[in-house]
Length: 201
Image 1: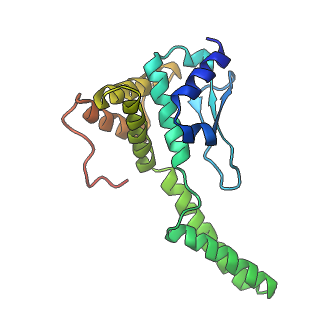
Image 2 (image 1 turned 90 degrees about the vertical axis):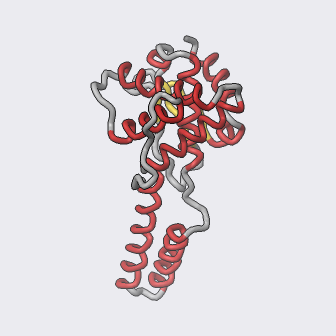
């Protein structure tokens, strides 16, 4: 597989928002098939690293769905949006600057602590099983616009998760992968049991 040719093909598969915010990078030395770092608020670039020697062992639909899921997850991470945690981060930072200007050490510590707690909450929300499930759902919707049925797209993503675990030499799934696989089996019509509605994401 020629990485540059595959990258051009994958760029066509990606939605326009993904092409604007993410970058595909060949990384043959990494042990994972596909990987991306959690995006930091100060870094606009959101690279997706692919080991093309491992990537070629997946089918084309599996590759497409894996990429769409990764792009959906990366573009779904929002550090700056109007909710209580982002407001708390901003208030903490502003408070910290004001207290620092007045040389109030305790005030700076309190404001900094508020910002740190709120930032950690944002980070944890974006790293949760819910964010992965949302990315799966978004990838399936994009695949439907590309001609796949919902069940077919879910089945491709499910088989991709299973294939990646084998390629990477992992004997079992992590907890998030187990939840995702169960949800995808239900969407694909392979299992009558999905994840419970009351599941604490």
